[in-house]
Image 1: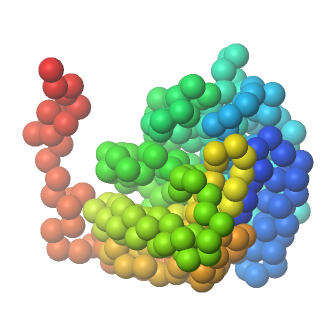
Image 2: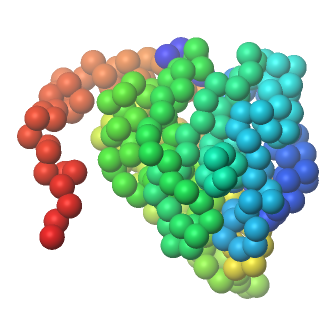
Length: 287
């Protein structure tokens, strides 16, 4: 990889409001590009909203080839940047929870969510493979929300060459609280968990981890607490969101390539000394 400046966004994506959500996405990307960002990471399902109610099929689109993908392709060509953003993808008569990656040359790839949480199972089919997407500046792996609670997801990305691991979320935080103090407690609980999980994923796998979350009440019983975090390959936090409220926010963070190289050169770095031939039991299902 090379030195890379990323922009990381938390935003409220309203359920099924594709045009309004896409307008927000475009404005964030323009602002990020104006500030020198080369890669912009936006949350899970930021275009279509987090579908846990209603008709996901109506809002879903083809990836690539759908109107949102095509619009963002034109935007990336204009601005010369890369964008990762979540969308409900339609293919083969079913919908997938998908994070697509687009750059100045057009559509580059996608990752479908591998693990469905709770009621998501009733709206989306699950993806079946971890994809590594080479954007030239770095190689990306992507874990979508609940995927990141499984250490195998990030490890699979790392051993297949990911240098930067994107962790877009639409992590729900339960009943919406009118009291600000209670909202702040929810934000703290979500971010404490995000730091614990994603610092560990970065340290264990020697790669940058970029975390973002939706922020706000998005639809019936669908509320998100936000959160932004960038962690270096040694598990140290490089950048973090500054907002103390559940609101839109964007941060920029520089990822130095030397930090990745130094971690990989480290004595006894675990990807160099691992022994996959003895790990077979991990994939076995217990009776």
